[in-house]
Image (cartoon, rainbow, N blue to C red; front, side, top):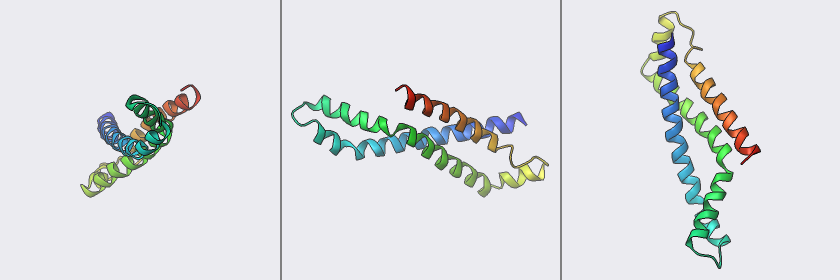
Length: 119
């Protein structure tokens, strides 16, 4: 049972990290024009810092969106490769792989609440 938990935890975590980095980059590119506009009269470092702060403001939203997208991708792949059918055939509940998403979601909710409150 723990092998299934570890496998899906690793799968969801890697997908989430990749999805988060892509979304963070997209949002950062989207805020470049706003950062340049707000740093009029400043130098390039000011524009980069303002762009980073705008992107960091969207951090908690990016966490939840990346987890949602990564869990959909992970379980869509598992369904295509008939892993869910094999798990059911072995007599294991299909809720067992979902524990990995719950653990990553719990971690992300703690990180998101910390960043909204303190950062």
